[in-house]
Image 1: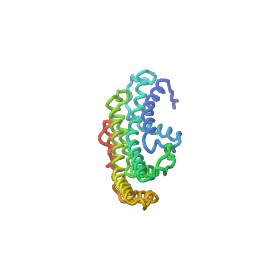
Image 2: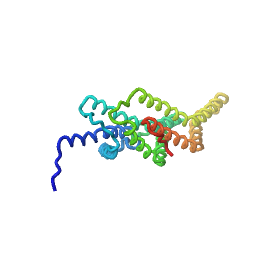
Image 3: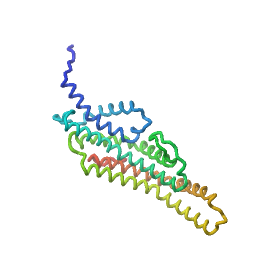
Image 4: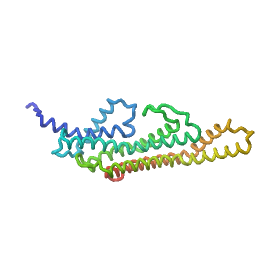
Length: 266
């Protein structure tokens, strides 16, 4: 049995084959939901990126003339990183919209002071914002949204080949427009509860003006809080439906971003 001889050309070719998928996968892991959480150790993220890049490498078509250390290679490396970040961030923005919806309802019903430290982000988050985030994450996993996102990400290696100029004004504009749409969707999720609570506050204000001796300021907070929880319980089914539609729109937007067929949840 003859020994296997490795030369510099073979090693360079293998490194080049893995380098470009690792960049795109690394950007994806930095921004995508579930895998980008702060509770996951960096070593696990590195191992996850290498394993996923190894699986995606056969799908990546690397131009033979593209060198890692050339100016074109540096530009392509930045582009691959941005593509991975953009694909993951599109879905991550949907979860940020859910947090925004929960914070908006919290401020309206008087729970703005009830905050806790989110271990995933290391920042203070309202209780309702954290609850909406948990609902969204459970819905996302229950509907296999993570598998749909991985499928769209794998398809990006075919529709957005390595070395071609894909990061242009239209690409960045589509990400920005989706960001505006997703926060609009978050506001629409919170809108029914906000309208109900505004009506309650208006009623308390009218009663306070007509009968000042009742001193409703002492019990107004309790009434607003109870009405807020009542509205959330009654509208829970609609909230969950809206969360599912939001995640489905996010995954469909990922499919449109990479130029693949719509990748929404079926």
